[in-house]
Length: 81
Image 1 (cartoon, rainbow, N blue to C red):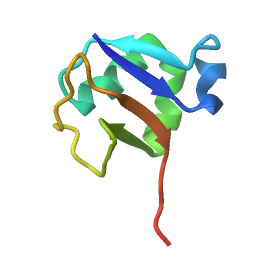
Image 2: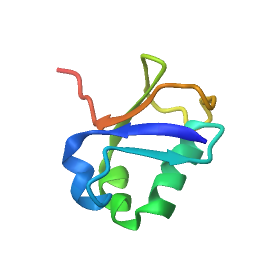
Image 3: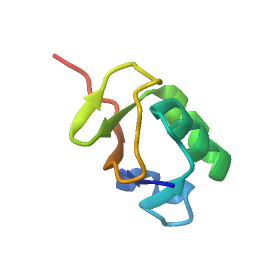
């Protein structure tokens, strides 16, 4: 299981939880697992999110591996400017 920390704005979709666990081996599975557990997360995830794994922002690779001990954060989408 991978522990995922969510930004506080998503608490209303996750029964007040800011940390959840999903079964996943890569970023795509993390996102799918979150939607499976909390279907209301689908809209914010599809609108665009950033995922940080072990301190690195994963730009677009859904195949980026995650380990059970990885630090995974789901963040509001980061945009350059």
